[in-house]
Structure formats: structure tokens, C-alpha cells
Amino acid sequence: MSFADLGLIPELLKAVADAGYTEPTPIQRQAIPTVIAGHDVMGGAQTGTGKTAGFTLPLLHRIARHANTSTSPARHATRALILAPTRELAMQVYESVKTYSKHLPLRSICVYGGVDIKPQQAELRRGIEVVIATPGRLLDHVEQKSINLSQVEVLVLDEADRMLDMGFIPDIKRILALLPDNRQSLLFSATFSDEIKKLADQMLKNPQLIEVARRNMVSETITHVVHPVSSGMKRNLLAHLLRHKPDTQALVFVDTKLACGRLAHFLERHGISADAIHGDKGQQQRTETLEAFKSGKLRVLVATDVAARGIDIDELPYVINFELPHTAEDYVHRIGRTGRAGHQGNAISLVCAEEKHRLAEIQKLIKLEIPQELVPGFDPETEFFEAGSRSRARRPASAPVEEAPRAPRSSAGRSQGPAGTRSPRQKSSVAADGFDFSKPYEPTAVSSAAPSAELQPTLVAQGKPDPLRRPQRPIAVLLGGLGRK
Ligand code: AMP
Image 1 (cartoon, rainbow, N blue to C red):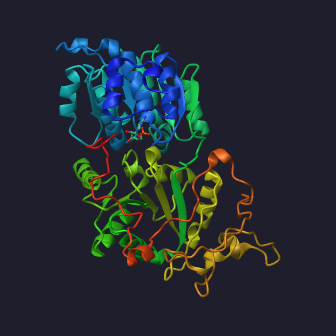
Image 2: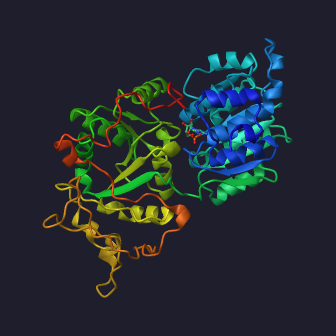
Image 3: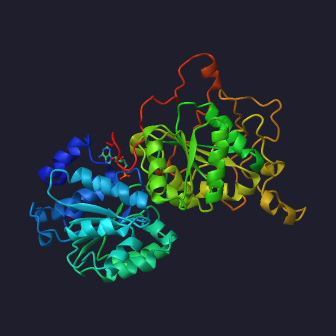
């Protein structure tokens, strides 16, 4: 199937061809005709599926009849509003809108907080058809009367689950009240909690449900691996792993802003170019850091979940969880940064004994037993190998020991993988939380669980090309930078 088969107007087909897309992705195949037909949509899609073009293209198709070259602001009423939870995601959507609307005289703007509002006001007063905004800043503009939402025909709520996590739902409700009732609404979310469903009920009329991957599922092109390690040795293990991949870039996730900066400094001190990105940094600094990562100047970007939202990097080969996230859904969000658009990706997690319960929750959600590989010299705490270690102190001596996925206690005598990592015995078993790992995985949920091609020191030592070595070119594309396809 081609984009032309989906009924898009020639100006959009030309822009799609310019972007180098030959075939629509599954979400695009479903969403484009549905949105063109005027239906509301509840879309279950992760980043990396092509969902942005999935809603942007038909949205532009629907408002294209308003496109004109007049200089009068009255001829450029706001027809489409796209709400995104973070500045980065808003910018990314804005870049898509610009890319796909390049052959149409439609105006677009991206408005977000943390920067001077005046230039945004001046631009809005010229009249803009497509407004991409974070909720708080949009309401600032409403208050200051720099935007009029009374002629909005299409509303998109992107990453609704993240909006919820970030406490934006009251703002969203205020915005909904300002929009015409007879609009078209599209809601996208990677996960669907009851609260998201409630919001969808309020916002959507007879929505068509579009789901490409099953809920909470992870891309099939991602290889997952866990390295059990003591919490105190995590930094050293991370530096060790990165040193063995001199040409690769990695996005490293930590829990807190403080840890973010500290870890980036630690890596820098160990000769690995790294920087941190988190909510406390100014917009200018964040943009510079992202640009440095995008251009390949920066090898490692250390980020918190919130700051990394919306980072769009083509061919990012590694996402590393320095700490496992507190919710299993966030694991899905995090690793959605790699293995995108059909590229191979690697999700590496450094897991200490304290985090075993989080690992169990993640494995349960993604329906996958993640292979565990010990790296010699970086053993975890002994508790890591004790089944149900979190409740060990409280478990009666006679209680049956739950079989959790185990890793060997000591490195002695274990066979070593090609990468100097050891695969511990992987027992199919019932985890502490009752999840039965021995059950067959559901076929549609398959993720590549082959042991990671981590490190590969043997190949490096023999002077053979490291299959993980990235080409020496700025491949990271975010904020719609050059080379974005
Ligand atoms: P998204 O899921 O919207 O974040 O898109 C993920 C990546 O896929 C972006 O870099 C898009 O430029 C790219 N992309 C979107 N649609 C297509 C397509 N039909 N063919 C190839 N790449 C695409």
C-alpha cells in the first residue's frame, strides 16, 4: 500500500516523498483514512511507530482548504491544536508539521513555557493555522488573549498518559472547555489506564479505536539484557560498558535530576563525553545539549524520564537504564527511544538487588524474561540471587522458596560469553509476584530476547570490525534536525 492509496492530497504526497517515506506504517494505514473521514480517534501507539505522521498528515489534509497566502491575520484562524506534554515533544511534532506542510501555505507555531512569551504572542497575532503547544503555556496565551481557539476544527492530545503523569489533566479540561463542540478530536497514548479512558470519554465522540502494537508492548527490534550489579558498582560498570563501545551513542536513564548531573560528571571524568538533561536546566541549555547529542559530538546523554520525553533520535542504538524505572510502563517509554522505525536497538538495564521487584514487574508487563548477564568484576549484592529477597527477612523459615529468575552467585567456573559476560542459568519459574515465566510468550508480544551483543571484546581484540560500531556520521536526529527521514 502506498500513501497515495490513503487518499492524501498531492501537496502532502509530495512532502511524504520528499521525506523519503515509501510506505505508510501500520498506524498510518489505519489512522490516515479514519481521520480524513472525520472520525474521532483513540490511538494506542508508542513513539517509533510513525504515529506523528499518522495524525499530522490527515490533520493537514482536513485543514488544507483554509490554506492561503493572504497577509491578513483574519485569514489565518487557528484550525488545529496539538497538545504535547513536554517542550521537546512539542518541538518534535512541530518539525513534523513543518516537514509535511511544506508545500501548503499553512502557518504553524510551537509554543511552550520557560521562554519569553512575547515573541510567541507577536507570531500568534499574525494568524496561525496549526498551533502545537504545551498545556500551561497555551493557557497563558489564552489569558493574555494572544490566541483565539473558537475556530479550532481538529484537536490532538499526544502522549495523554504522560500528560496525566505530569499533572496536566486539569489544564487539558480547561482547554477543552474553550474549544468548539463540533470539533474532531484525536487522543494518543502508549498506555491506557482507567483515568485515560475517563478522559477519552469526556473528550471523544464515538471514537474509532486504533491500536497498532498491543498495549504496553515493546518493539520487536529491541534486544533486552539485564546486568546484575551492586548499586555501588553501577557507575563503574556503566563506564566499563561504554568504554567497550567507543563509537556508539547511548541514552542513559536515571531516577533523579541530582543523579543525572552527577553521573554525567563521573563519565566525563572517565573520558566519556557525557552531559545531563533534566527539567531544571534552562531551555537554551537543553536545546544545546540535545543538539550536541544529535550531531554526535556528545556520546552519552543522561536523562530523567520527564526530560527525555519526546526525544526523537533515528538509529539510537542503546538505551541504558542506570536505574530501573519505578513503573513498568516507564520501561516501555524509555526503551521506545531505541529500535525505532525498523532499526535494531538495545535496552540494557543495570539492576541491583533492591530493584529485583521492579524487574519482575517489567517482565510481567512486557511478557518477556530478560536475559541476565554478569560482567566479571561487577557482581551484584548476594541478595540478588536469593529468591524473593525483598521479603526474605520476613519469610518464615518453612515457607516455600519462590523460584525467581536466577543468576549465578560467583563467577568461578562459569562459562563466559563472547563479550566477557556470563549468562546465568535461566530457570523458567514463577516470580515472587506470581508471574509465571515458564508460560509460552504470546506470539504478537515477541521482543528479541537474544543475549545482548554487548561489548564484543574478542572481536575488538582481533581487529575485526565491531558489528556494534556506529558509522562516523551524525546519525542522531532529534528536534527534526538534518537527516530526519
Ligand atoms: P514517531 O513514531 O512519529 O515518533 O516516528 C518515528 C520515526 O519514524 C520518525 O523519525 C519518522 O520520521 C519516521 N517515520 C514516520 N513515518 C514513516 C514512514 N512511513 N516510513 C519511514 N519512516 C517513517
